[in-house]
Each structure stands twice: as structure tokens, then as C-alpha cells.
Image (cartoon, rainbow, N blue to C red):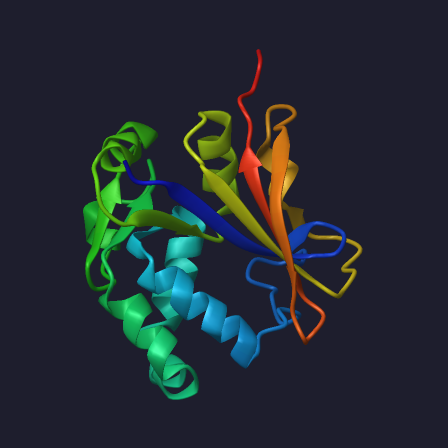
Length: 189
């Protein structure tokens, strides 16, 4: 059985973006981070995105700038099979290479039940939170960047309640980032 692993970057005060959509100029990305990204991509069968993250990623990774700045990451991002989970997008909106539209979490649960490489959710805080609440996320990686934003959109903003987490590991990066890896626990209602 596959695992669903989710990975997000946040500020020290828990925001994944500033007050404006895609206000992420504070992301602390370097060669060590890109090595981690490559390992994550190589270990995954599918990339999974919510609507907003899909639209942002699809608007960046196929561009000449992305290919010039991060050729190895861009090659993998563009070549891998991608799933966008959305109830509002139409199939005609899903144009990034190797992408397909999924309407609900049941389809992800079916993919998870198959054997093979894992599913990797990148960013997508609303989707990640919903999948954790459904008990579908096996591992949550949060890359904490050494910056305090003071305001923005937080991972927990759409949570319906507490989501208990078990710490699996920590890793400090040379640039000051800290990767926290958790196992989401069952939610009691």
C-alpha cells in the first residue's frame, strides 16, 4: 500500500504564504533544499495538488525561467504524473503536462490502496488539512523557514478542530530551515 506524504513550507509563526496569494518570496531555498526536493520527487509516483497550488505551480514550472533556474527540479515537476483535487476546476482548466482532475478524496484513497511509490502532496494547505481530517495523510513534512511574517494564511486556517501529530523526526538545514516530520493521528469526534 502506498503512503500519502504532504510537504509544506511555513514561516516560524505558521504561515504558508503572506497576506496575498503566492506571497512566498521569504521561502529559504538553496542547494540543500533542492537535494531534498529531488529525493522527494524521485520517491513519488504522483504529485498531488489542491486547486490554488496546482494553478500556481502550473503557471511556474513549465516556464523558461523555471527550467533555467532549477532544471532538474523542473524536469521532474513537468514530467511526473500530477493529480489536482478540485470540485471547481473543469477538465479544460487542467493543462499542465501529465495532469488529471480528481473530484474527491475517494479517488486518492483508491490510489493509496494500490502498491507502488507514494503520493506526494506539495503545498496545498486546504487539501492537506482535509486529507488529514479524513485520516489519509501518513506523513506531514513542514519546512519551517527562519522568518516571522506576522500575518498571512496558515496551515490550520481550514481545520475543523484539533489534528494530533506524532513527531517522527527533525532535520536542521545550513540555511536555518528546520524540517519537522509528523505522523497525523486519528481524530476522535
